[in-house]
Image 1: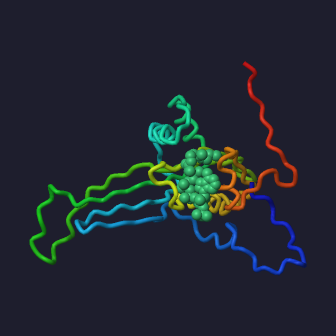
Image 2: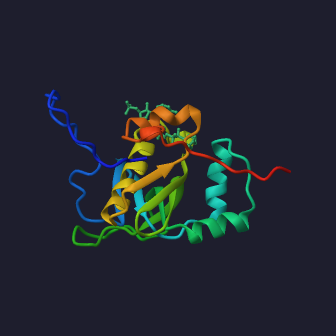
Image 3: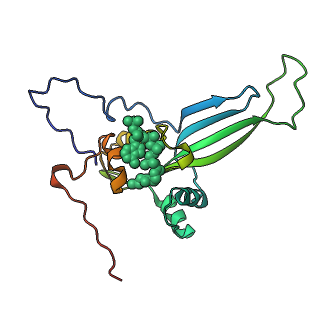
Amino acid sequence: MIPSRKGSTASTKQPAKPSLEDNLGPEVDELLLLESGQPDGSKAEIIYRNGGPVAAADLEQLCTKVGWPARPLAKVEAALRNSFMVSSLVLRVSLPDPAAPPPTGPEQPPAPLLVSEQLIGLARATSDHAFNATIWDVLVDPEYQGQGLGKALVEQMVRSLLRKDISNITLFADSKVVDFYKQMGFEADPEGIKGMFWYPRF
Ligand SMILES: CC(C)(COP(=O)(O)OP(=O)(O)OC[C@H]1O[C@@H](n2cnc3c(N)ncnc32)[C@H](O)[C@@H]1OP(=O)(O)O)[C@@H](O)C(=O)NCCC(=O)NCCS
């Protein structure tokens, strides 16, 4: 949860650490996070994407990879469709098309590329569209973890919510990822607020 800013104390002398609220900037549909190229002209890019369709089956495949239990595809599809915001990490690979004729001169346009995309991370948020949003299903493909992508995903989603003037942002953290969220400014039980749960008893 990102609580409202508290007043700074007089004894605080350290310069304020930049926070997610600072320099929000304009909304972007896509943001290039990582890029690598090969001498053969192929290129791999990892892109943060705000919105756009995500296939329920691709999300479930990712869930399986991180060890989460399977969910009914129709419900996952409904959850994606009804989410206020769906942000994804996409691996986009571009390869020169081997079927394309080779360029005949320096003035020739560059050879066309074959482009494939793979979902490697996702976060989605539900919201009342005014005050509150709750972030769900934060995950990064294990093959791509540990490169700052999960942090970039959550930070960009928080920034997108703040740009929409939604500043009461909550999530439910597994105990093993509490520190992951803490370093982005999320607090457990701010001002004594406790998450409470109701489950069916059958
Ligand atoms: C949690 C998860 C999204 C993190 O993604 P990631 O891309 O590996 O994380 P990042 O590389 O962006 O890590 C950013 C920072 O958080 C730290 N971090 C990552 N996972 C952490 C964890 N489980 N606990 C504490 N810190 C963690 C990293 O060390 C890094 O710290 P640094 O900036 O000081 O180097 C990913 O591990 C994942 O998908 N886990 C399985 C699904 C899951 O548990 N999701 C959370 C549901 S509540």
